[in-house]
Length: 367
Image (cartoon, rainbow, N blue to C red; front, side, top):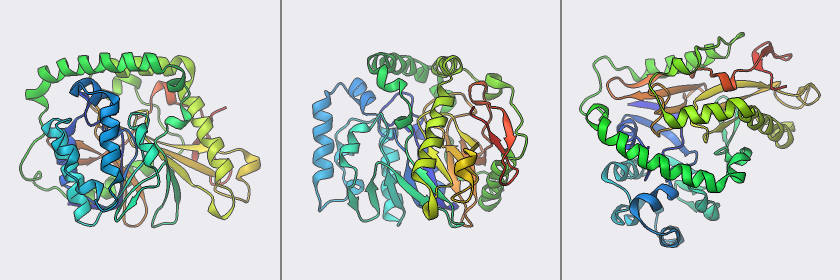
Protein backbone atom coordinates (compact mmCIF):
# COMPACT_ATOMS: atom_id res chain seq x y z
CA UNK A 1 0.00 0.00 0.00
CA UNK A 2 1.40 3.37 -1.04
CA UNK A 3 0.69 5.92 1.70
CA UNK A 4 0.90 9.66 1.14
CA UNK A 5 -0.25 12.89 2.73
CA UNK A 6 -2.44 13.89 -0.22
CA UNK A 7 -3.63 12.48 -3.51
CA UNK A 8 -4.96 14.66 -6.35
CA UNK A 9 -6.89 13.13 -9.24
CA UNK A 10 -9.10 14.79 -11.84
CA UNK A 11 -10.99 14.24 -15.06
CA UNK A 12 -12.26 10.76 -14.22
CA UNK A 13 -15.37 11.32 -16.37
CA UNK A 14 -17.40 8.62 -14.62
CA UNK A 15 -20.38 7.86 -16.84
CA UNK A 16 -18.43 8.48 -20.03
CA UNK A 17 -17.28 5.82 -22.46
CA UNK A 18 -13.83 7.41 -22.22
CA UNK A 19 -13.43 6.67 -18.49
CA UNK A 20 -10.86 4.01 -17.59
CA UNK A 21 -12.84 3.01 -14.53
CA UNK A 22 -11.40 -0.48 -14.12
CA UNK A 23 -7.87 0.86 -13.88
CA UNK A 24 -8.98 3.63 -11.54
CA UNK A 25 -10.67 1.22 -9.13
CA UNK A 26 -7.53 -0.95 -9.09
CA UNK A 27 -5.37 2.14 -8.46
CA UNK A 28 -7.49 3.23 -5.51
CA UNK A 29 -7.10 -0.21 -3.94
CA UNK A 30 -3.34 0.16 -3.59
CA UNK A 31 -2.94 3.77 -2.43
CA UNK A 32 -3.90 5.33 0.90
CA UNK A 33 -3.77 9.14 1.21
CA UNK A 34 -4.55 11.16 4.31
CA UNK A 35 -6.47 13.59 2.09
CA UNK A 36 -8.05 12.95 -1.30
CA UNK A 37 -8.78 15.88 -3.62
CA UNK A 38 -11.15 15.23 -6.53
CA UNK A 39 -10.16 18.07 -8.85
CA UNK A 40 -13.15 18.30 -11.16
CA UNK A 41 -14.88 16.41 -13.98
CA UNK A 42 -15.30 13.48 -11.64
CA UNK A 43 -18.84 12.61 -12.73
CA UNK A 44 -19.53 13.50 -16.36
CA UNK A 45 -23.14 14.66 -16.17
CA UNK A 46 -23.32 15.38 -19.88
CA UNK A 47 -22.11 11.89 -20.83
CA UNK A 48 -24.53 10.27 -18.36
CA UNK A 49 -27.40 12.08 -20.08
CA UNK A 50 -26.25 10.72 -23.45
CA UNK A 51 -25.48 7.17 -22.37
CA UNK A 52 -28.23 6.58 -19.80
CA UNK A 53 -30.82 8.41 -21.95
CA UNK A 54 -32.10 10.63 -19.14
CA UNK A 55 -32.92 14.31 -19.27
CA UNK A 56 -31.04 17.01 -17.41
CA UNK A 57 -33.89 17.74 -14.96
CA UNK A 58 -34.05 14.12 -13.81
CA UNK A 59 -30.32 14.06 -13.19
CA UNK A 60 -30.11 17.39 -11.38
CA UNK A 61 -33.17 16.57 -9.23
CA UNK A 62 -31.49 13.30 -8.24
CA UNK A 63 -28.30 15.12 -7.21
CA UNK A 64 -30.26 17.78 -5.32
CA UNK A 65 -32.16 15.18 -3.33
CA UNK A 66 -28.95 13.29 -2.56
CA UNK A 67 -27.07 16.34 -1.30
CA UNK A 68 -30.00 17.95 0.52
CA UNK A 69 -30.19 15.25 3.19
CA UNK A 70 -28.29 16.77 6.08
CA UNK A 71 -28.56 13.61 8.16
CA UNK A 72 -27.02 11.45 5.42
CA UNK A 73 -23.42 11.29 4.20
CA UNK A 74 -23.42 11.66 0.37
CA UNK A 75 -20.56 9.19 0.07
CA UNK A 76 -22.41 6.59 2.13
CA UNK A 77 -25.60 6.92 0.09
CA UNK A 78 -26.58 4.14 -2.29
CA UNK A 79 -28.71 6.46 -4.40
CA UNK A 80 -26.32 6.81 -7.32
CA UNK A 81 -25.37 3.15 -7.18
CA UNK A 82 -28.99 2.01 -7.35
CA UNK A 83 -30.09 4.49 -10.01
CA UNK A 84 -28.43 2.40 -12.73
CA UNK A 85 -26.98 5.50 -14.34
CA UNK A 86 -23.46 4.08 -14.26
CA UNK A 87 -22.12 0.76 -15.48
CA UNK A 88 -20.71 -1.70 -12.96
CA UNK A 89 -17.04 -0.73 -13.37
CA UNK A 90 -17.90 2.93 -12.75
CA UNK A 91 -19.94 2.07 -9.66
CA UNK A 92 -16.91 0.24 -8.27
CA UNK A 93 -15.00 3.52 -8.33
CA UNK A 94 -17.71 5.14 -6.20
CA UNK A 95 -17.52 2.16 -3.86
CA UNK A 96 -13.76 2.69 -3.52
CA UNK A 97 -14.37 6.33 -2.58
CA UNK A 98 -16.84 5.13 0.03
CA UNK A 99 -14.31 2.63 1.41
CA UNK A 100 -11.58 5.29 1.65
CA UNK A 101 -13.99 7.62 3.41
CA UNK A 102 -14.93 4.92 5.93
CA UNK A 103 -11.24 4.38 6.60
CA UNK A 104 -10.84 8.01 7.64
CA UNK A 105 -9.62 9.62 4.38
CA UNK A 106 -10.78 13.24 4.10
CA UNK A 107 -12.31 13.89 0.66
CA UNK A 108 -12.68 17.30 -0.98
CA UNK A 109 -14.71 17.49 -4.19
CA UNK A 110 -14.01 20.48 -6.44
CA UNK A 111 -16.41 20.41 -9.43
CA UNK A 112 -15.24 21.10 -12.99
CA UNK A 113 -17.05 22.04 -16.17
CA UNK A 114 -18.47 18.53 -16.79
CA UNK A 115 -19.94 18.38 -13.26
CA UNK A 116 -20.48 22.14 -12.97
CA UNK A 117 -24.00 21.68 -11.60
CA UNK A 118 -22.45 20.58 -8.32
CA UNK A 119 -20.99 24.05 -7.90
CA UNK A 120 -24.45 25.04 -6.71
CA UNK A 121 -23.71 22.88 -3.67
CA UNK A 122 -20.29 24.41 -2.98
CA UNK A 123 -20.02 24.96 0.76
CA UNK A 124 -21.59 21.62 1.63
CA UNK A 125 -19.71 20.15 4.60
CA UNK A 126 -20.13 16.68 6.03
CA UNK A 127 -17.76 14.85 8.37
CA UNK A 128 -14.74 14.04 6.22
CA UNK A 129 -16.36 15.27 2.99
CA UNK A 130 -16.79 18.71 1.42
CA UNK A 131 -17.74 20.29 -1.91
CA UNK A 132 -15.85 23.51 -2.64
CA UNK A 133 -15.27 25.76 -5.62
CA UNK A 134 -11.60 25.82 -4.71
CA UNK A 135 -9.33 25.01 -1.79
CA UNK A 136 -5.85 25.79 -0.53
CA UNK A 137 -3.78 22.76 0.36
CA UNK A 138 -0.83 23.30 2.70
CA UNK A 139 1.88 20.68 2.31
CA UNK A 140 3.71 19.32 5.37
CA UNK A 141 6.68 21.39 4.15
CA UNK A 142 4.63 24.59 4.36
CA UNK A 143 3.88 25.23 0.68
CA UNK A 144 0.47 26.69 -0.10
CA UNK A 145 -1.10 25.34 -3.31
CA UNK A 146 -4.40 26.60 -4.72
CA UNK A 147 -6.57 23.74 -6.00
CA UNK A 148 -9.09 24.47 -8.78
CA UNK A 149 -10.32 22.51 -11.77
CA UNK A 150 -8.91 25.07 -14.22
CA UNK A 151 -11.81 25.64 -16.61
CA UNK A 152 -12.21 29.06 -14.97
CA UNK A 153 -9.20 30.21 -17.02
CA UNK A 154 -10.38 28.64 -20.28
CA UNK A 155 -12.51 31.07 -22.25
CA UNK A 156 -12.81 28.77 -25.27
CA UNK A 157 -15.31 26.49 -23.54
CA UNK A 158 -17.53 29.48 -22.75
CA UNK A 159 -17.65 30.68 -26.36
CA UNK A 160 -18.13 27.29 -27.99
CA UNK A 161 -20.60 25.52 -25.68
CA UNK A 162 -22.81 24.28 -28.53
CA UNK A 163 -19.90 22.90 -30.53
CA UNK A 164 -18.49 21.30 -27.38
CA UNK A 165 -21.71 19.38 -26.78
CA UNK A 166 -21.72 18.09 -30.35
CA UNK A 167 -18.09 17.04 -30.05
CA UNK A 168 -18.84 15.32 -26.75
CA UNK A 169 -21.57 13.24 -28.39
CA UNK A 170 -19.21 12.30 -31.21
CA UNK A 171 -16.50 11.29 -28.72
CA UNK A 172 -18.95 9.11 -26.78
CA UNK A 173 -19.97 7.19 -29.91
CA UNK A 174 -16.37 6.92 -31.06
CA UNK A 175 -15.18 5.74 -27.62
CA UNK A 176 -17.96 3.16 -27.35
CA UNK A 177 -16.76 1.51 -30.56
CA UNK A 178 -13.10 1.65 -29.54
CA UNK A 179 -13.92 0.19 -26.12
CA UNK A 180 -15.58 -2.81 -27.74
CA UNK A 181 -12.54 -3.49 -29.90
CA UNK A 182 -9.91 -2.97 -27.20
CA UNK A 183 -11.65 -4.49 -24.18
CA UNK A 184 -9.84 -7.87 -24.27
CA UNK A 185 -6.48 -6.07 -24.29
CA UNK A 186 -7.06 -3.26 -21.79
CA UNK A 187 -8.64 -4.94 -18.79
CA UNK A 188 -6.75 -4.07 -15.59
CA UNK A 189 -4.79 -6.87 -14.01
CA UNK A 190 -6.29 -8.42 -10.89
CA UNK A 191 -4.70 -10.25 -8.02
CA UNK A 192 -1.66 -9.43 -5.85
CA UNK A 193 0.70 -6.57 -6.59
CA UNK A 194 3.80 -7.40 -8.66
CA UNK A 195 6.64 -9.11 -6.82
CA UNK A 196 9.15 -6.64 -5.42
CA UNK A 197 6.64 -3.79 -5.40
CA UNK A 198 8.10 -1.21 -3.02
CA UNK A 199 5.68 1.58 -2.14
CA UNK A 200 8.26 3.76 -0.37
CA UNK A 201 10.73 3.40 -3.23
CA UNK A 202 8.08 4.27 -5.82
CA UNK A 203 7.01 7.37 -3.92
CA UNK A 204 10.61 8.57 -3.54
CA UNK A 205 11.32 7.92 -7.21
CA UNK A 206 8.21 9.88 -8.19
CA UNK A 207 9.36 12.82 -6.08
CA UNK A 208 12.90 12.65 -7.48
CA UNK A 209 11.66 12.50 -11.08
CA UNK A 210 9.48 15.55 -10.68
CA UNK A 211 12.27 17.47 -8.97
CA UNK A 212 14.81 16.63 -11.68
CA UNK A 213 12.25 17.63 -14.35
CA UNK A 214 12.37 21.19 -12.99
CA UNK A 215 16.14 21.66 -13.21
CA UNK A 216 17.60 24.21 -15.67
CA UNK A 217 17.27 23.60 -18.56
CA UNK A 218 14.24 21.37 -18.95
CA UNK A 219 14.81 19.07 -21.95
CA UNK A 220 12.28 19.20 -24.78
CA UNK A 221 10.70 15.86 -25.60
CA UNK A 222 10.08 14.36 -29.02
CA UNK A 223 6.67 15.97 -29.11
CA UNK A 224 3.53 13.99 -29.88
CA UNK A 225 5.51 10.88 -30.80
CA UNK A 226 6.86 10.64 -27.27
CA UNK A 227 3.46 9.80 -25.83
CA UNK A 228 2.77 6.68 -27.91
CA UNK A 229 -0.52 5.40 -29.23
CA UNK A 230 -3.17 7.44 -30.99
CA UNK A 231 -6.10 9.51 -29.77
CA UNK A 232 -8.26 11.46 -32.22
CA UNK A 233 -9.47 13.78 -29.46
CA UNK A 234 -5.91 14.44 -28.31
CA UNK A 235 -4.66 15.24 -31.81
CA UNK A 236 -7.51 17.70 -32.43
CA UNK A 237 -7.02 19.33 -29.05
CA UNK A 238 -3.26 19.71 -29.42
CA UNK A 239 -3.62 21.16 -32.94
CA UNK A 240 -6.11 23.74 -31.70
CA UNK A 241 -3.93 24.78 -28.80
CA UNK A 242 -0.80 24.95 -30.95
CA UNK A 243 -2.40 27.38 -33.35
CA UNK A 244 -4.16 29.65 -30.90
CA UNK A 245 -1.64 29.86 -28.08
CA UNK A 246 -4.50 28.66 -25.91
CA UNK A 247 -2.29 27.02 -23.29
CA UNK A 248 -0.14 30.14 -22.99
CA UNK A 249 -3.22 32.29 -22.36
CA UNK A 250 -4.46 29.92 -19.65
CA UNK A 251 -1.10 30.01 -17.86
CA UNK A 252 -0.91 33.79 -18.06
CA UNK A 253 -4.32 34.04 -16.41
CA UNK A 254 -3.21 31.60 -13.72
CA UNK A 255 -0.08 33.63 -12.95
CA UNK A 256 -2.07 36.87 -12.83
CA UNK A 257 -4.61 35.29 -10.49
CA UNK A 258 -2.01 33.90 -8.10
CA UNK A 259 -0.13 37.20 -8.02
CA UNK A 260 -3.36 39.10 -7.33
CA UNK A 261 -4.79 36.77 -4.69
CA UNK A 262 -1.70 35.38 -3.01
CA UNK A 263 0.44 38.25 -1.79
CA UNK A 264 1.85 38.81 1.68
CA UNK A 265 1.97 36.22 4.48
CA UNK A 266 -0.67 34.10 2.72
CA UNK A 267 1.29 33.94 -0.54
CA UNK A 268 0.55 31.02 -2.82
CA UNK A 269 3.42 28.85 -4.02
CA UNK A 270 1.55 27.24 -6.90
CA UNK A 271 -1.63 25.76 -8.27
CA UNK A 272 -2.99 22.28 -8.88
CA UNK A 273 -5.40 21.94 -11.83
CA UNK A 274 -6.99 19.36 -14.06
CA UNK A 275 -9.12 20.21 -17.12
CA UNK A 276 -6.54 19.95 -19.92
CA UNK A 277 -5.98 16.17 -19.46
CA UNK A 278 -2.23 16.81 -19.85
CA UNK A 279 -0.10 15.86 -16.81
CA UNK A 280 2.37 18.63 -16.16
CA UNK A 281 4.68 20.27 -13.62
CA UNK A 282 5.96 23.62 -14.87
CA UNK A 283 7.67 26.38 -12.86
CA UNK A 284 6.29 29.74 -14.01
CA UNK A 285 8.10 33.05 -13.64
CA UNK A 286 6.47 36.01 -11.91
CA UNK A 287 6.66 39.69 -12.72
CA UNK A 288 9.79 41.12 -11.15
CA UNK A 289 7.88 43.94 -9.50
CA UNK A 290 5.62 41.45 -7.73
CA UNK A 291 8.05 38.70 -6.86
CA UNK A 292 10.39 40.85 -4.72
CA UNK A 293 9.86 40.68 -1.02
CA UNK A 294 6.19 39.78 -0.71
CA UNK A 295 5.97 36.16 -1.82
CA UNK A 296 7.74 33.34 -3.67
CA UNK A 297 10.09 34.20 -6.51
CA UNK A 298 8.19 31.84 -8.84
CA UNK A 299 5.21 29.51 -8.75
CA UNK A 300 4.73 25.94 -9.90
CA UNK A 301 1.81 24.86 -12.05
CA UNK A 302 0.77 21.23 -11.58
CA UNK A 303 -1.75 19.39 -13.73
CA UNK A 304 -2.95 16.02 -12.50
CA UNK A 305 -3.71 14.62 -15.98
CA UNK A 306 -6.78 12.42 -16.46
CA UNK A 307 -8.36 8.98 -16.26
CA UNK A 308 -10.16 9.35 -19.58
CA UNK A 309 -8.77 7.28 -22.43
CA UNK A 310 -6.05 9.31 -24.12
CA UNK A 311 -2.52 8.68 -25.28
CA UNK A 312 -1.35 5.40 -23.79
CA UNK A 313 1.53 6.86 -21.81
CA UNK A 314 -0.29 10.00 -20.69
CA UNK A 315 -3.44 8.71 -19.04
CA UNK A 316 -4.08 7.31 -15.56
CA UNK A 317 -1.90 9.86 -13.74
CA UNK A 318 -2.17 11.44 -10.31
CA UNK A 319 -0.30 13.93 -8.17
CA UNK A 320 0.92 12.72 -4.78
CA UNK A 321 2.44 14.54 -1.81
CA UNK A 322 4.84 12.55 0.36
CA UNK A 323 4.62 12.76 4.18
CA UNK A 324 7.59 15.15 4.18
CA UNK A 325 5.79 17.55 1.82
CA UNK A 326 7.63 16.82 -1.43
CA UNK A 327 5.46 16.54 -4.56
CA UNK A 328 5.61 13.72 -7.10
CA UNK A 329 3.58 12.27 -9.94
CA UNK A 330 2.57 8.66 -10.49
CA UNK A 331 0.64 6.71 -13.09
CA UNK A 332 -1.09 3.35 -13.03
CA UNK A 333 -0.03 0.55 -15.33
CA UNK A 334 -2.26 -2.50 -15.55
CA UNK A 335 0.73 -4.84 -15.31
CA UNK A 336 3.16 -2.90 -13.12
CA UNK A 337 0.72 -1.23 -10.74
CA UNK A 338 1.65 2.26 -9.52
CA UNK A 339 4.86 3.60 -11.04
CA UNK A 340 6.76 6.91 -10.93
CA UNK A 341 5.92 9.24 -13.79
CA UNK A 342 7.75 12.17 -15.35
CA UNK A 343 5.37 14.38 -17.33
CA UNK A 344 6.66 15.11 -20.84
CA UNK A 345 6.80 18.47 -22.54
CA UNK A 346 4.70 19.08 -25.65
CA UNK A 347 4.99 21.46 -28.59
CA UNK A 348 2.02 23.55 -27.49
CA UNK A 349 3.27 24.12 -23.92
CA UNK A 350 7.03 24.18 -24.43
CA UNK A 351 8.16 27.68 -23.58
CA UNK A 352 11.56 29.41 -23.55
CA UNK A 353 13.17 28.78 -20.18
CA UNK A 354 15.16 31.27 -18.16
CA UNK A 355 16.75 31.15 -14.70
CA UNK A 356 14.52 32.49 -11.92
CA UNK A 357 16.09 35.73 -10.60
CA UNK A 358 15.37 34.64 -7.04
CA UNK A 359 16.66 31.06 -6.91
CA UNK A 360 18.18 30.23 -10.30
CA UNK A 361 15.69 27.46 -11.09
CA UNK A 362 14.58 27.21 -14.71
CA UNK A 363 11.17 28.83 -15.11
CA UNK A 364 8.93 29.09 -18.17
CA UNK A 365 8.76 32.47 -19.84
CA UNK A 366 5.19 33.22 -20.95
CA UNK A 367 6.02 36.49 -22.69
